[in-house]
Length: 263
Image 1 (cartoon, rainbow, N blue to C red):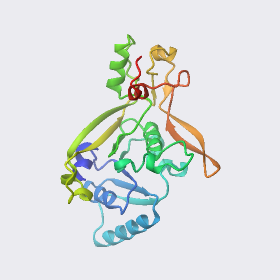
Image 2: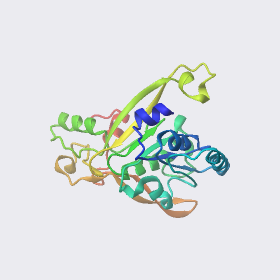
Image 3: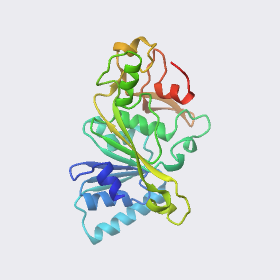
């Protein structure tokens, strides 16, 4: 965890660290004590959050942390927590989410639900300020490729490169073998590589359509990196942040590559 915080999120004392799905709160407390930054966490499971709050109270009673720590019980996609998790895009934040093994993916969807928690996490990241970082243990899906890939794709189709072709950069980093670098696999025989996926917000909150047949691909107008969409949850209309999509053609380069379609 220390390597993740210092090397991959490049967390410093002046940063705001956020753990989405804080569990028993250990990563939040580690950031507050060892980095000395403001550290926040949100957890949907009440038992875990209550245990985390008790641990925090006990640890703080022993020694005061150099950084502030705040734990919240709730759902990360709910609008009332947006400021807590993103600073409303006004300043960069450094975020970690343990979404390993698709726990925020299809496994998180309820019947007839349109989006997964990973989708909402991608939407929240797309809304964050430039300089923000997000580290996950399962790869997210966006409607735009990383900046370098987006411009390579544009160049391949005789479209001009653009500094706002995308709004994020991406790294896939091998941390080691699963049975060597994570506690839940420490006694297993799994020797598969264990990855962390690091996303960095760059430029403005916009991108150019990746479909060379779309009129918006050549010169815009740009597509917003995020959108607020009304979805039904439990029969009630609610507003959720999701990644933006070109409404002219409703196509994405990532979706095309996943299907193996040719442009």
